[in-house]
Length: 323
Image 1: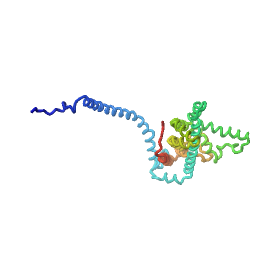
Image 2 (image 1 turned 90 degrees about the vertical axis):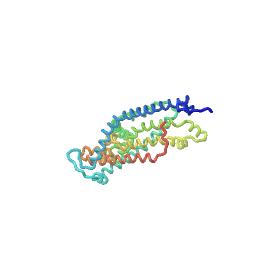
Image 3 (image 1 turned 135 degrees about the horizontal axis):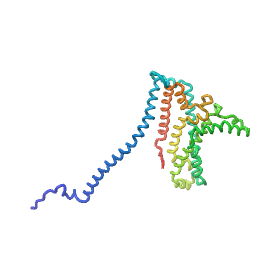
Image 4 (image 1 turned 180 degrees about the vertical axis):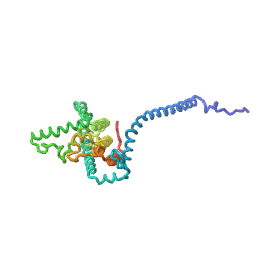
């Protein structure tokens, strides 16, 4: 009877051969690859350190200091004492503060709607195969690259001199006087200028969204008899949902913090009819209300964050197609 000795691990046919050698090589190479990837990721995180340090030093730290002082009676100089939430209690009963919030929220809501409607209309029009479409897009971008304060001063001159002169020459009474001096119409000038400057940014985003919609969808719907408004309602607007959300969130954030355009146009006037929250907060830094306005800034920051979160939550589930 022939005796067979057990095969060793290295000579076992089931465990040796080209396939086994390849697997061992793959494990060794894979092991080195994982380590290399980890080191690469570590380098990526290392490059973030300077940005995080600067962000912490110039954004997070000052914000924390501001929140701390909002619980004091600090005037911006000299000594101070803790007063708890007294500043926050005073905010809810201050007519000037409440008026600034009312103006800011109303201005932001109206300007967002105007901007989105105008930008989307222009984007759809320029998406058509018309001559000079590329050149027109370049022209429309110009307002976005001009400083807000410069734009405001230019329009201040137009609303104060040019528009009344033209209205007088044609006998249009309502505009013979500058609307910047009318407490009931001054806000309209701010909306016009703000929309004029921010429409280009929204236009670019909508243009990118329109180019991402397959042309085949429009062709197929046209075969079914859908054209014009039906295509806009059934194809364009649903597929632009993510881009509309982005533009709305960015617009609300920007308009809530409006400052330079208002300063250049009305400086918060007439009286305090167009005084925004940002202007009120800044005025407190120079008027001895440092701690009080820091409380105002803290509340305003929370409101801004809540509005942004609610906007995103209301549109959750939409497909943000960015390509």
